[in-house]
Image (cartoon, rainbow, N blue to C red; front, side, top):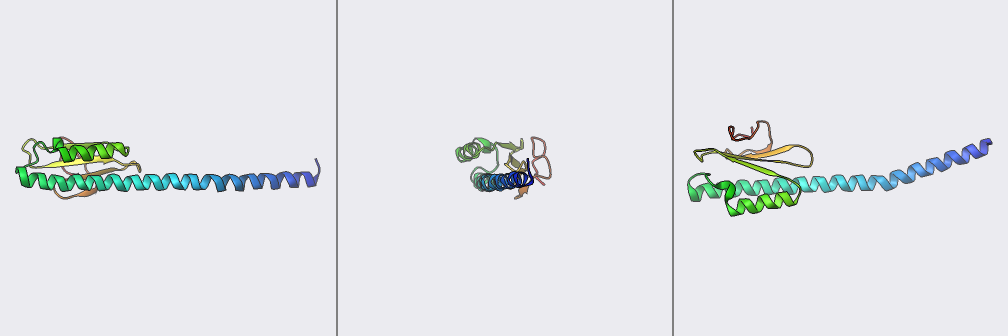
Length: 132
């Protein structure tokens, strides 16, 4: 194999690498944009759950049964259809609640009855009804 053949081989490999990146990059970028868009939609659905929770307490006087309220169930289904899973915890006295969902960025997003909405810094569960 002569120097010219090696030069052609190197140029051919360079063309293949550039072509590979030009095909692969748009696919990777569009996948990340899709995940980012789904994160936004899931967070908006969680905000809607927060708004329904506020209205639920005004109408019922507390949060007891919130997780079974048809509007909440509908939003939970919407989130599941987008690939998320919502957990809602209501205190025994019905005075507090929190809800959390894992989003595509692998972050837990949380809302609570204290008005917080954002990344979870406290573990929203059946004994702690705070996200932050």
